[in-house]
Amino acid sequence: MKSWFGAFFILINTAHLPAQNEAKPVSMNFLSDLEKQVYYELNRVRSNPKEYAKHVKKVMGLFDGNLMKYPGETAIMTTEGESAAAECYDFLMAAEPVDTLRVSRGLSLAARDHADDQGETTETGHTGRDGSSPFDRIERYGQWLSTAGENVDYGNNIARRIVLSLIIDDGVPSRGHRKNIFNPQFKVVGIACGPHQQYRYMCVMDLAGGFKAKKTGATVRGED
Image (cartoon, rainbow, N blue to C red; front, side, top):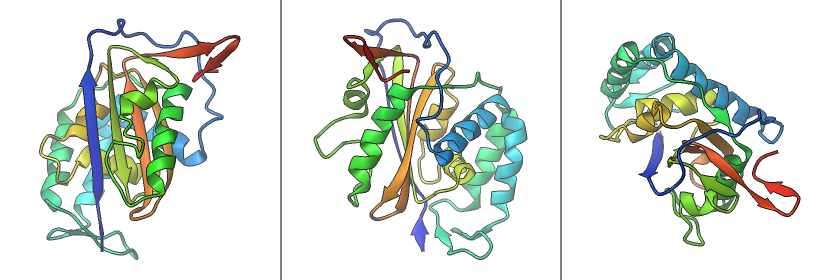
């Protein structure tokens, strides 16, 4: 059996500039098909939580005690069982919509750094092998504005399951992943998914109130 596992990190820093988004739309050609699908799923659940609750309702029917099993697949051992999914369903039915996120190339590059680095190991969490934090990685490509955070999901390679795992947030009393996803202060997101030595798959989401790309001469690092 594989575990349903995720990690959470968030920090608010009022020393940075007020939140603002990039001035122009950003192409998504730097994202893989899966990463694009994760992006769309994030915006589906933020923009219409009541509609998205139907997907959680389906998950609620997959439990036998603490085991969750998709038809024809290996059972997943959870911490809380159906109760976490039921609590998430109630949350979504009561939640107000949140503005959709814009995709950021710079944040995606930061997320990619972590996915590529950690994916080669059996480690989990937010610290890179070089000791970097999510904020260190983001600041390689520019400046995050107002607030920033990171979600990491392990063990899923289907976009909807990645988002469901994070909003159900089994075994995380604070429901920190869900709070990140529904945080109205977050306006931009970067996404990177890839293999993981222990959990097979991982997906990193870096979120911020805004992002200002780093400029080097005539080249803009982080945003097109």
